[in-house]
Image 1: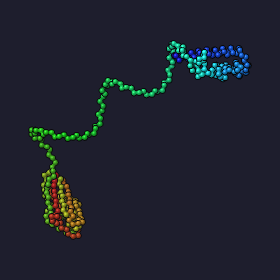
Image 2 (image 1 turned 30 degrees about the vertical axis):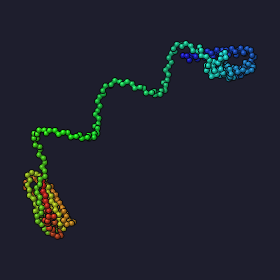
Image 3 (image 1 turned 60 degrees about the vertical axis):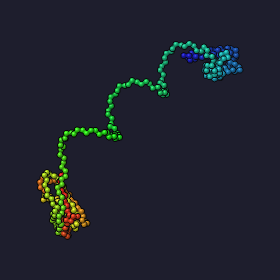
Length: 306
């Protein structure tokens, strides 16, 4: 509001100055004989050509020959020798009386455009703690964590007094039957087999007779050392049945060195009753073969059941 009043004062002073200058120009024109100029030249009111000119466009210049406004002053404006407006157009005179009483409040102007976003302000102080909120719903159970390390072993406590003897418990179910030994036997005498023979021979002494009360699996095992030249076959003969190939048996070997060890095993499911088993041998060679009963060569047989 004060700025508006100040601008009004400046306009008032300028108006007064223009009027004074106009009167001076008119008065001077009546005293000085004007030289007639062409319509496209400036008019000069003094013979000594002072810095005051008028051009056909109706502009008056002070201090300039080319005024661009109705009154164009190049220099300061003073009243009674005191500069009140400098050459830059700034008021430099006394401000006394320029600011009047405030006028009535004007009508609110239209809303301006949104300005640019300001810089982020400093972080404010932490406010007071609010009231505790309502407890939320229970979340889902998390994944099971890894097993922790085993803790240190605590010292053993003092042994307590012996408690009273408890009642005898019930008899548990019968467990599966264990292996039962049936028998063991070995060769008793030497056995000679002629050359190129296709017959099976019983090995003397290698025979067992036994009885089963229930159905069982019976494990037959035989082993020994061979001193023959040519092919030799071995087989179990159980309850009148020879096991393996009729011409080769269950084990068919060709000893590549003297006293070569061999072994044979057969597992058979047998029904309750009387049973018999023996070991038989077959020899194919150019010379006869003797199955010796020496301790380190004798044939042995072991039988067990479960």
